[in-house]
Length: 357
Image (cartoon, rainbow, N blue to C red; front, side):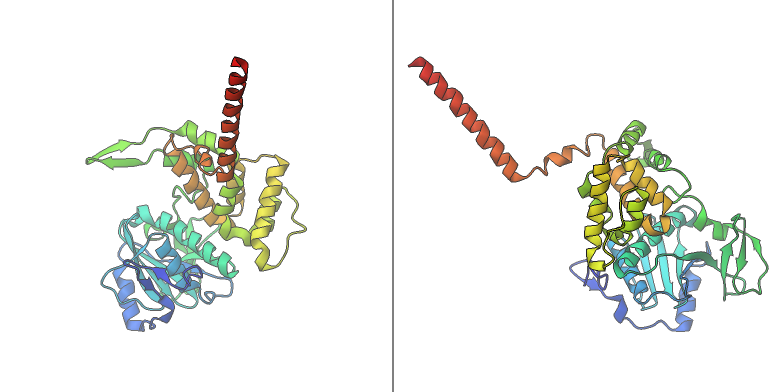
């Protein structure tokens, strides 16, 4: 059930099952919303049919728990309203299922945390959508605080917002809304190179002194131009198998013969990456990241996983992408090598004694 995102991990071998909880009363929900409305308007995500896909909300909560979020202490969780805590971001969040849309309320240092929180939520939605074959295409906005009944969406120039309720006049985007949409390191218009370079300059607190990590710009660039291993690609894209045709088309390999049946998604993904490897055309991490950037609505989570994977190797120059592969050499190969070495030494010794005789 954990793999199906029905139950989520808690401490001390306990599990959380959000789908069996009671529904939150309207007055209690309004009070909870008020506790999170001090610093910013809640982010609203909606789907094309103006209804959250069935099972999306509890599965999203479980997915975030698996990503390191914790249940906020002292709360009574509800089926449609759950408070979570992120120690990494330093914020508490309230997730609300209104049936029509998903609300993400945030309390804490919102101007720094909201952009990254938005990326994490989108990544989890992508993961859930891939598992249940839902659409991950969502419309973004913020809950209108003027009428309380509509969603404020940005115009194409992203300079003003208009409420879907129709009774509110368009207005400029203020700090209560813009905190969600300013470019974070993982969700900007910046290239993959700029993202990885920025990650190398994050200050690290040691002994109450802010120090800078060593500049590893050359290492980042080198990794982007390296050829990925197929095993790494399959692990990083395991939740994106339903998009094998998109990935294959973007990598310029044959996709016409891929099976349309869900049980063959893994086989399709393996075939696509094998054909790409065999083509030997631009087989680099840079190319993979570019594909993810070209299809953010479908490959957003994969992009985050690839960036996290590359940054984890580049943050420690001694931790090479290739040194780990030696540990993965098959045991049979090692045994054959040792046996061959023993036979060689025996032959040398035997010839030595024959010569003496």
